[in-house]
Amino acid sequence: MKNIFHTMPLEELCARSLEKIKNVSGAATSAEIAGTSERQNAIRRAMDSISEERLLCQNGSAELDLVMSILDCELDQETQEIVPVFHGRNDPEEGAIGTVVNERVLTPRGEQIAQCLGNLRILCEMLQVLQHRFAAERIVNRRFGG
Image 1 (cartoon, rainbow, N blue to C red):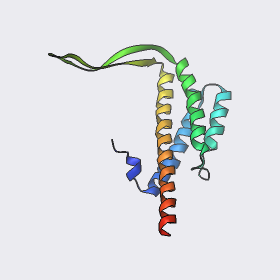
Image 2 (cartoon, helix red, strand yellow):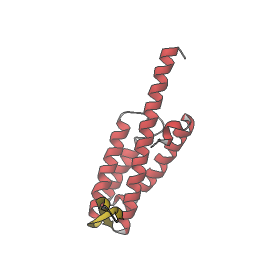
Image 3 (tube, rainbow, N blue to C red):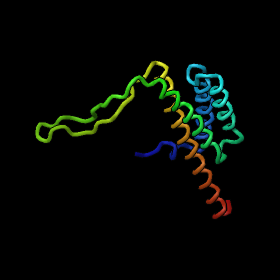
């Protein structure tokens, strides 16, 4: 599968990353998502460290990992049960073709947390592609004297 972030113009990727940081930060630090004020503050500190000036720091992904681990704990608390779900089809000749995956049954708050975690994972991917593209640009500029 082709990653759209690799083909996006660099300025657009930067702008979208900054926008995603702002949106995810706002959602992740809300009382509905973060839970306790202690967790809210920890998430806020981590998200504040990923700012425009520090967008490409190596510790940016570590900060996002911290936020995701906090929200994973919250998601565990909002999981009502885990049920096996079959993804596939029934073939008349072969029988069931597919896989069984354990899926969480979440509370409404859990659904919000899961959505926020999904956005954090997208942001992580965006920042990683951005770091790689900037590194590649530096290499090309050094190589060809740009």
